[in-house]
Length: 88
Image 1 (cartoon, rainbow, N blue to C red):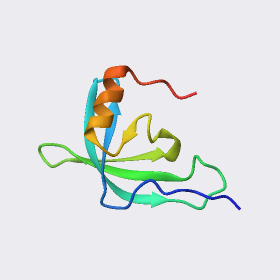
Image 2: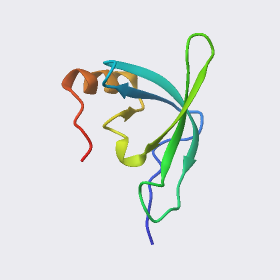
Image 3: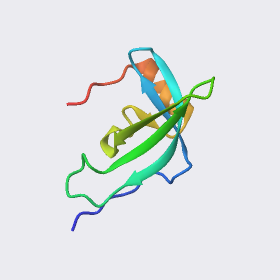
């Protein structure tokens, strides 16, 4: 049996690092998918709403939490300032 710790709940704000733009974006978790045998299919689904109301939906695997996905702006900004380590 595989145990998965769910990092957040639907409706939680999260902060995504965009290293190409050197910015932190605030998203809202709109879905959490768990139960798959491969960790890549278990993910958070987030929604970013831009200043004029347009929305972008993205998926992030749980292993990206703490690298690109954070649950406080302070943690995200600190990681951005320190430099984000590439996946791999």
